[in-house]
Image 1 (cartoon, helix red, strand yellow):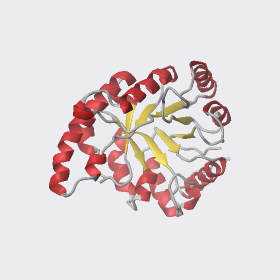
Image 2 (cartoon, one colour):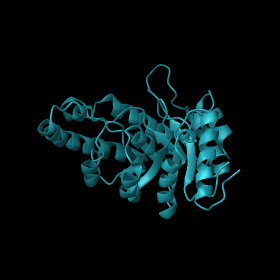
Image 3 (cartoon, helix red, strand yellow):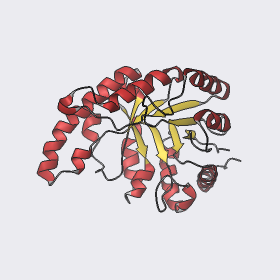
Image 4 (tube, helix red, strand yellow):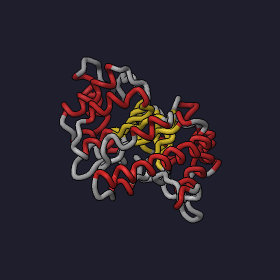
Amino acid sequence: MTGMFPFRLGTTSYILPDDILPNVRYLAGRVQDVELVLFEVDDGRNNLPSGEVVAELAALAEAHALTYTVHLPLDLRLGAGGDLGHVSLAKAKAVIERTRPLNPWAYVLHLDGRELLAARDSADRARRAAEWQDQAVRALEVVAGWAGGPERLAVENLERYPLDTWTPVLERMPAARCVDIGHLWLDQQDPVPYLRSALPRTRVIHLHGVGQRDHQSLALMAPDSLDRVLAVLLAEAYAGVVTLEIFSQADLEGSVAALNASLGRHGSPGGG
């Protein structure tokens, strides 16, 4: 299904309208990585895999040379006053402990920066940013301890935020990056300069098309937009994970076809 890419091509655990395990069974052999998209983890209904499911996921990974990335369910932040009791940390710990046997390629996470978006002016934003950066670093340190090291964490850029939002935090904390190209396209940003700058620390890339919303097929994108991104990855021989962050068979097939067509335009044969 995939072409001769230097990177590990992946997609989400919700391509079929079914639970995680049937999706991974379907995707094994079709992609090289599966992003486990885990939602709210409460005492009631949730999609946190049982120990038995995790064991089967591990067996599928071994049989098919498959890796997993795990998307943590809530945007990370400390509690009021900087304490460690915020629900996002509790849920991150539960997910990490359950999925640790899978030896994930990365734990992808968002940092909660809502207070930055609420700033009234540049002076107010600078004041808020100093406190937010301290708290974000502390939250990452705590979660890195559970995950087995900061290099296992991949901090994702989010839409609506200035592109330099995450830089001061990552200058103080040696976590990896997750570059979400679709978020940049959604904000009508040229992703290439940001990707080039971030790539040395990038462990995961999220790639998805933008139409009336994001997380759609790459077939919706102008070929040149995709070609420019792929050119950077090929030139740098990027060997991390590229996740097609979409949620249907049709969007997966269309996205893989678009990637293979782009690969062909770069002079390499596409996959079947």
